Image (cartoon, rainbow, N blue to C red; front, side, top):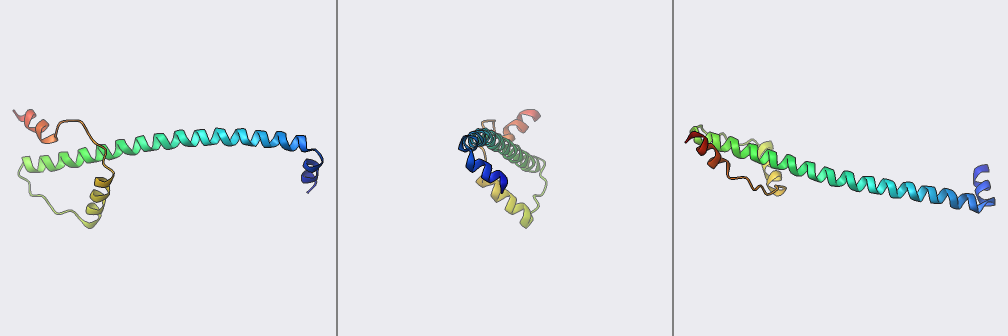
Length: 103
């Protein structure tokens, strides 16, 4: 309570402290924006890698005539979520790559 009375008695001190707080707030907002941007980029890379991996496994299964086992409920849910968040990939289809390796 005494500190509050000190601020009320000296508005200049209160304004100085407010200025410091505003500066810290702006700095934290800038850091948060950078973290958010990096997180989105990382998630995009993870989704792209996972999608490529799934496509590669499916292509290998087809190429080797392995029987495709049905996905579990958990795998189906994950595949649906991945399909909603997929990042476009410019690489050639994996089947083409596999066929070129065996040619």
